[in-house]
Structure formats: structure tokens, C-alpha cells
Image (cartoon, rainbow, N blue to C red):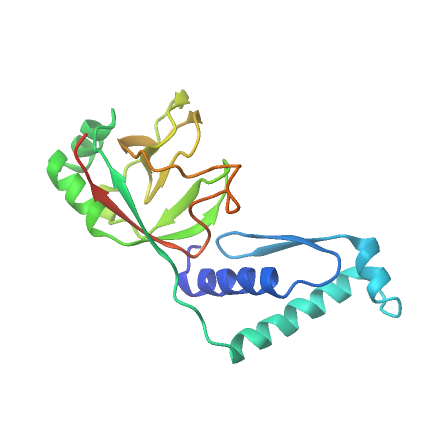
Length: 204
């Protein structure tokens, strides 16, 4: 189930874990309705020799973190605008499937503000929720073996952007020149869970 309230809490807990990490903390990975915390068992046990298990220590840390979240001010999510040339090879299919014109598909796609519910599939790939159901379109029955980096697609009620060339089955409606993944950057991905996204139509 996609629930914005739960996902907001997950995003806040993710930020808190990264800014208030414990000894042995490796990383936290947010998803739609869960947060996975990876930790080094030996380091955690070394820091808390009197505790029963490393799991109990991590569990208590998360319980206390949730309490601290309730007492702290939540920060506003970042809003990122993505320039898109709506030249995708599947945009005609999307228009036909939804019984709309191409112009209407573009207008609807650019009017919404999307939420990054989770990152996954590829480095920098953001699963975006909040798309208008009027342009919802099923994935391709046979995925492509190569989808170019920067491709903007629709799959069901979600939209997303391929940060790297890869196989994929989303319906491609456009492209963006904005880099979404850069290993040489301190923040390797442009988007992160909890961010807000708007698509802006640009000319080729």
C-alpha cells in the first residue's frame, strides 16, 4: 500500500538515522513503508557489551529515534524541477491507451507534483507517486533491452526517470538532459526519498 503519511515518517526517520547514527551503523535504506537499517554486529556489541544482542540495541535505537522525531520539527522536502522534452517513442501509445491527445497527456503529466517514495532498481532511479490516474498506462508486455539514460516513463500509476541506460519496460514519454546519477559527486543521486518533483516541458 502506498501511504503518504507512512512514507513521510519513513523519510524523516531515514534523515534522522543519517544525522544521528550510532556506532556500528552502516546505512539505512528507505522503501515505500519500511526502513532497513544495516549495522556491523561486532561494532555494536563492542559499544554495548552489557546488552543482550546487537538487534536489541538497534531496535531500541529506532524506538528512541521515533520518539525524538515526534519532538522535533519536520523539515520541508526539497522540490526539484526536471526539464523534459516530450519526445518519447511511447507517448502516442499512452495517448491512445488513455483516449487523450498527446498535448493533454503532457499537460496532465506536468501539472502534478510528485513524491519520491523510494529509490531503487538502478542507482538514482526514483519511484514517483502522485501521478494523475487519467494517464496511467501499463508496462510494456515485452521490456526493451536498452532504455537510454534520461528517459521519462510511465508504469501503471507511477512515473520515473531512467538515470542510466538499462533494460526496462516502462512506457517512454520523454527525455531529460538533467544528470540523475554521478559517482564523482558528494551526493551521487539528484533525488532522494521524500523529495518532491515537478516536470517542466522544454523544447528540443
